[in-house]
Amino acid sequence: MEALAFYSNDGALQEHLETSLESLESHWPWLAQQVSVTWLCYEHSLVDQATQLSSEEFWALPVPGASRGGGKLRYPASVVKLVYMAALEAWYAHGLLWPTPELDQASRNMIHHSSNDATSYVVDVLSGTTSGPELSGDAYTTWQRQRQLVNQWLQEQDWPEWHQCNCCQKTWEDKPYGREQQFYGSQGQNRNRLSSDAVARLLHGVVAGEMISPVASTRMRQQLQRPLSLEARQADHENQVDGFLGAALPEGSQLWSKAGWTSTTRADVAYMEVPNRKPTLVAVLAEGLWSANEDQWLPQLMAKLLHAC
Image 1 (spheres, rainbow, N blue to C red):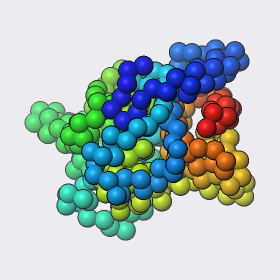
Image 2 (image 1 turned 180 degrees about the vertical axis):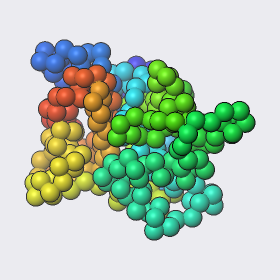
Image 3 (image 1 turned 120 degrees about the vertical axis):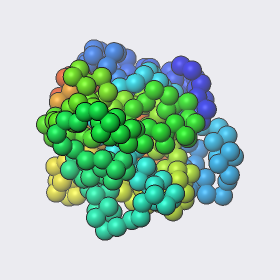
Image 4 (image 1 turned 90 degrees about the vertical axis):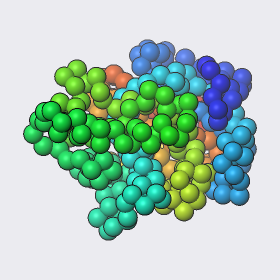
């Protein structure tokens, strides 16, 4: 694994991650090729850690971590909504947009309920585009350029983890149609792409209060926090806890996360504070039918990782 700007490889964590994955691979062999994991471990709570530091000081802080395939680009499913939430806060900060009740509701529903309708609206507002029939000529060229605005913002962050990532597509209940399919590509060649390293760094910045501003980070954390009580989870069958990393957490834990799931993908990025354990952040992106259909491998992976925190 190549060392990243914001975390360094820890030998003990790397060994534990490899051992944990190998243990799961004995039951689910597809894990060896279809899963990317980035795992960070902290001595103290990460919440608002950056608020008293300059950006340079914060990103220079040592963060022990480990990964397997952390730089590999994969389809992130609804985890991309974390990027769109952060972009919305960046647009507010730069005066490109102003918060409205409609946008606030859309952002909440995009994250808390993983609503694709809300995400479609947010992407339209961020880019100044709309879905519709196919386009041609200058109209399509302009439309494509507008839909790259989030990617342009990501590149301006100058994070090596964002290299070749792609966050310009909406998320769908069915599939894209019209100009959206035109833009997506007949073989999905322009689909969203992220790495577990990239989403780990984004959540790391949000939790610490470094992403956009402390106030913006607080708003984003409020949207990402997940109730872990059995009652709350039973009331919401799409709670983004059951079948994901948070399902392994014991009573009294706190969880901030964004999960994603399609017929061929299962993904989750989560920051967790667990009683009598060190705070930890785990990002997992997986592709393939097996990873999507099996809902126990992520909780089991998290349970194994918790033993080393």
